[in-house]
Length: 352
Image (cartoon, rainbow, N blue to C red):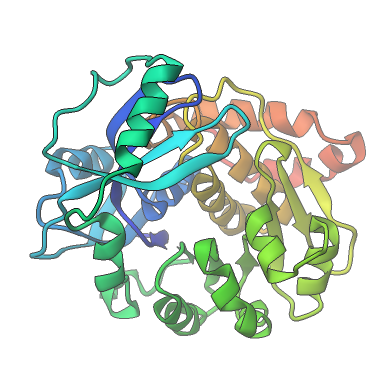
């Protein structure tokens, strides 16, 4: 039985890490990483999304074997010809919206570490391309995830995470799924500016709103994260958790001062999908414990496993016991008074 599901994109990523290491044609997409982030904590997680006819079946099969229900994944007749490339910088920023044909020879085997000159040359070559075939971005615009795509048997799910999608569809899904006490969380993604006009409506119908620092600045221009969270909080009762990258997250619960949750220290290989994995962990934490700060801690641990390898499978295949061990270590780094308050909800989690 599906207890939680995520809705959004399922794509293919090729990543050039900050040190030049290649991660080639890995499974990606906000729905995939958020589902993997939730599965780390509980069984019964599914995905609602759409894929082109030529999407690699092996990726979907491996995700299914990891315990994620794909009954909500719809295959379209259309094919995608080009995959997206991400180039990461040492400061954590990245260049994206670069594409190359999926059929083109790859520059080197996966795991190869390119020299800085080779990385710069590859980036220039991709940036200089003109025209091109169908991309995953174009596919998602033509085939957004819709409320009607949710399998009938999933309507009893306890929670859903709405990853970035076409704005009209994301709003319609929020309206249609906020019923019966279901927890609905939403990541505005690149749609933050377009959602700004409806911010009050969102705050009044969501269980949790999860902007990144960049998106928070677009929603409340000119305000630092704590002030921006307070401004959004004044619009409605939704829980707010801002994703601050390497600085962790900031939890705005009610009228209290925002609470900072640090990152879990790990050796980061590929930051792709970390924010989405965080969102999935938060949804699972809210469903399992109802405690916003502990939910942010679960999200932090999900993100920490996401960045340890290219693609989502390291996260999707990590044991719950390993996640629980890392969670306990993270909670112990918090202020003693705060960590003490989390002991009771922590006891509700099954580490098996």
